[in-house]
Image 1: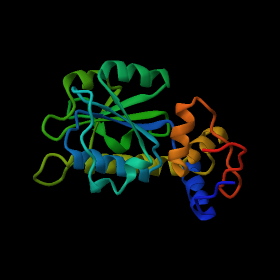
Image 2 (image 1 turned 90 degrees about the vertical axis):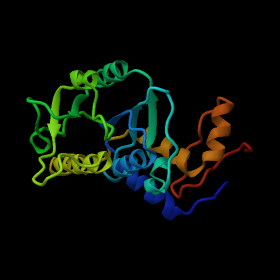
Image 3 (image 1 turned 90 degrees about the horizontal axis):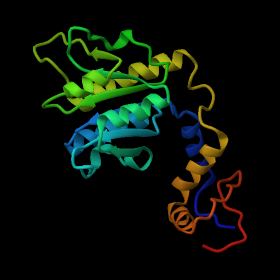
Length: 223
């Protein structure tokens, strides 16, 4: 038996996974400043998002920094080269896409329904979302500003919108029962608890073993 984690840690991870919202995500378009992307990831983790997306022209991702508070360990970032292709893939999962974008059609971010499968599309601070991205969206949303400045920092805007999504989903009891399949939660828990062993097994094409109730591994093979 391999037991390198505490039961408390395993239980905490399972509590987190039971709150995950697989049909809520963020798509960052060319958010190239590391501290912004890291802070966005941290907010995603806070509201129960397990996977987010980024479109970067180079196909790469900026280096994370301490702003994420290690949230990048718990949130999977998928990097894409093409925004239209990414949106098409999201729509296959029946996602509605809301772009944070100033336009004549834009509505208050609180006046849309986040209880449906939703992707929130945000651009960088300098340019916002591109015209191409705006055209891909089902709706444009804005955060009304009552002061002299016209917009928030992109990571702050992400947090504001996501916590409205969380508020709506809590009211709809969407956090009250697991949204992920039991098998997926077990798999993700193993990846988080035993990353070295998981990497070795995946390279060998072997299945991940089932975790015991205390988070340990009962196995008849050696790592």
